[in-house]
Length: 174
Image 1 (cartoon, one colour):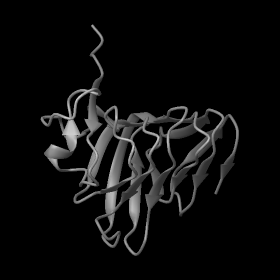
Image 2 (cartoon, one colour):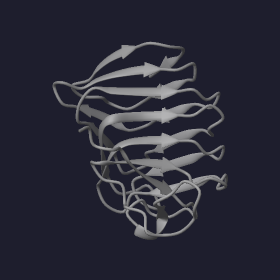
Image 3 (tube, rainbow, N blue to C red):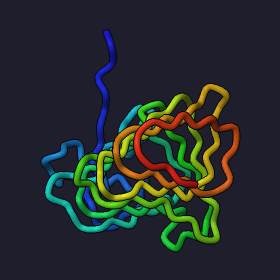
Image 4 (cartoon, rainbow, N blue to C red):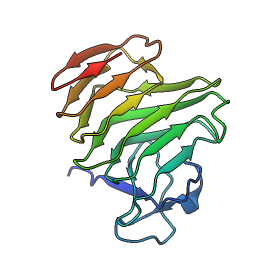
């Protein structure tokens, strides 16, 4: 039997990624009780009905199997609330998906370096007219390749290590 994919949905309110109250177990609910994303869950931004722009801080190093952006509001991920502390996002093979109509997504790096560790082959799909901007250093294991799919723009900026990019689709800059 193949394991059922686990999803947890961001409830909004510009909360910290690692706050349990920031996550819901269902896309149609703003009820708390969601699992903080980890290596076996996909983080989804946001629950249905939450369309406000979100600033999500990483109070600690974090991980997720994958990330999906479905809200029409923009999402910014940053090292901490001020963007001054280095943090690491470990991203599993679920990759990243931006749905059609999703708002802009930006990983913000100010004085604190944000690192993204790719644990294996990645597909990052942008089906939105808004950009997916990843201002984070990509660190890939030997088996990690990054494939860009979809018609939307992917901007990658920062120093990347051990990363092979296989680019399919529309526009990639960086």
